[in-house]
Image (cartoon, rainbow, N blue to C red):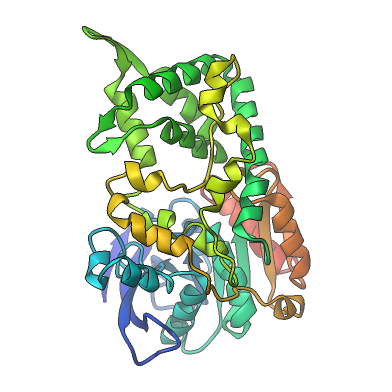
Length: 431
C-alpha cells in the first residue's frame, strides 16, 4: 500500500485478494486493485466511503488527475474507492497475453464466466469490511457499473447506504436479443440526427465505405473493413460524439502519386477506435452481461442486425441512400480484424454458446428495497434503452429518477459535480 499526492487529493493504492470463484472461497485467488482518493487535509478524518464502479464491461476505473470532474465533488464528503473491476486495469488483467495461462479456449471461457456483475459485487462485499470496518457504503455506478449496482441491491443491500446510478439501469429480464432489437432503431435515430447536422457527411461516408469495400487496407495489423467503419457510430452516444465523427470523416482522403487513398490520419483514428487492446473484456463479455438462464446469447447483435436491412452498407451503396453507422455492439468479425482479439475467437464462441448463466437480479428483493437509490436516465441514451431503464426504475421500490435530455450517456463525465449533486439530493429527499 502506497500513498502520494495530486492537486487537492491524497491517493492510496490498495490491493485485495478475492476468490476467483466465490462458491469456492478456498480455491484460486485473484487480485483486485482499488485507488483510494481523499481530499487533502482530510486524510485522517472519519469519512463515509463511496465506491465507484466504472462502465464497460472491461474498463478499469478512470485515472483522474487531482480533483477533476465529479471526483472533486465526491471528496468533499466521501473517501472514494476507484475500483478496477476484476480482469481490468491492475486487477489480474485478462487479455490475449494473460488468458493462455489458463489453458485453451474452453478453460479461458470457464475462467471468464466468473467476471460478470455477480462476482464483482461479491468482490465488493469482501473488500468493504476491510475498509469500512463493516459499515455500509455508497455505490456510484456508471453504465455497466449501474448494472452491478442493481445486482448489489438484489443480493447484498445490507452493504449499502445509498446507490447512485448514471445511465446504467438494466432490464431485469430481457434477453440479449431484446436489448439489440431495441438498440438498432435508437442508433438509427442518432445517425439521422448526425446527418441532419452534417449533411455533407452522407456522401463522405458513402465514399469511405465504397473505398473500403474495394481495398480493405490494413493499419499495423488491424484490418480496416466497412463493418469497422460503420461501428464508428459508437461515438454518437457521447455528448460531443457527432462533432468528433464529423471531424474524423472530413480528413478521410488524401491525394497520392497512386491516386486517392485513405489518409494515414484517418486509418490510424479508425484503427484506434476499433481496437480492443486496452479493454478486451468489453468484446468478450459484452453480451454475457445479459445472460440469464439456459438460453445462449449467441451473437445476439449480429443475428438481430439482420432484422434491420437498412444497416447493410452494400445495399445502401447500390442506391443513393445513406450508409448507416452502428453503435455499441460486438460481432464475430471483431475477432477477425483486431489483433488483440484474434487469438480469443474460439473463447468468444464458447461464451456466446454458454447455456448455464445464473440469474443476475432478484425482482422480489428489488420490489421490497429500502436502500435509497437515485438514477440519472438520459432521455434518448444510445447505449442503454430508456424504456427498459424506466421499467426497471419502477420495479425497484423507492428508486427516484432524474430523466434528462441535457446529457448523453457520458453525462457523469460531462456534467461532473452537477450530476453527482443532483443524485445525492434525490437520495437525501432534498428535491
